[in-house]
Image 1 (tube, rainbow, N blue to C red):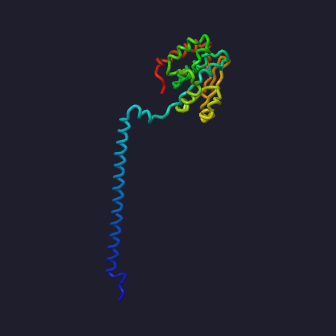
Image 2 (image 1 turned 120 degrees about the horizontal axis):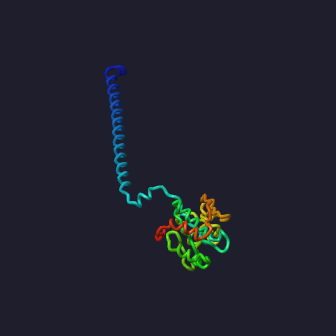
Image 3 (image 1 turned 120 degrees about the vertical axis):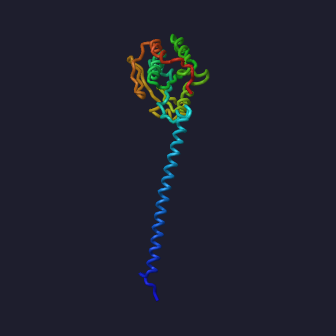
Length: 227
């Protein structure tokens, strides 16, 4: 005798199965809701922990989270001193340094060890400039300012202002030297100093002493080397 598919026993089995499926769906839904709540609570605790950690960061750590500032600028100062022709003069290097410091930029002038012997009447002014070691570097005798400056600029991801092509250093510093956005040329003439890569076109002081008078208030103590 075959079972009646519509009999009471079969209907009871189907109802029991449907009830179990409904219960299973309710259980899964409940578990999902509970899981989402636990995840939300965990994320909230994690966010609170991270906010507290950031607030407790030391100054160096907080600075690391700050957006980077504009790149440091390295000036091939003796090269600029010849932009006005011969003999070399500190007019252009000092005027450019003053303008960039007024803009809040980090800047360093690099000089060869024999610079003082090339400057004639400006030697005493150059000696005063050397007292501000944060902004002015004279490389040791036997070293080339070009190489030390390019190494420092590469390490800092900085810019170099010069009309030099640095052919002797291309193999080592090719990425910097071949990048027109990092090796910036300029000109001095007609009473103006121009560095297009920095967006600068400024009056050129009539003398190095005048340039120094404009620069000196911006130097401060200037005895702490840049790192």
